[in-house]
Length: 142
Image 1 (cartoon, rainbow, N blue to C red):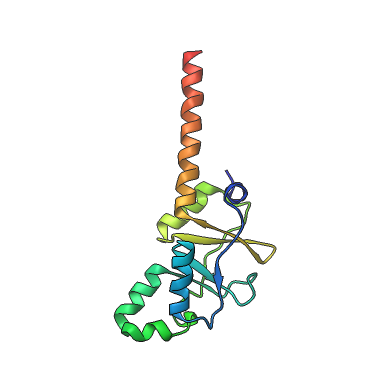
Image 2: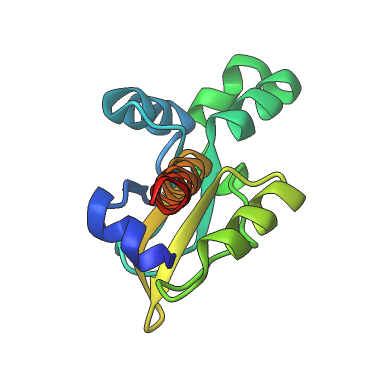
């Protein structure tokens, strides 16, 4: 299955924050949308970075409450792994597992086109396995 298939079912909306947003504003956005990561983008189409709840927790230990007033650009991951809509779900699952990544932005023609979480990938893998199981049971039962 392809990543584009996941985006067709979940949608292509991506939560973003600008690089100058404060960590406090980031946390409000994460809570508002009940999500674990956002893409850092000046225009909603390009990717400057990605920042997750884990990034905040790790930096909180270093900076304390002062972190809340710092810009998101100071804690984001700037070297973002991305994939295209034609990427294979199994390949992305391996990449996410090997590199311990939970969120991967999807890029089409150099522009942000969606985001896929490890939960999306696992859900898709389970659905594929269930379909294969049903097909095998039907085959065995004639």
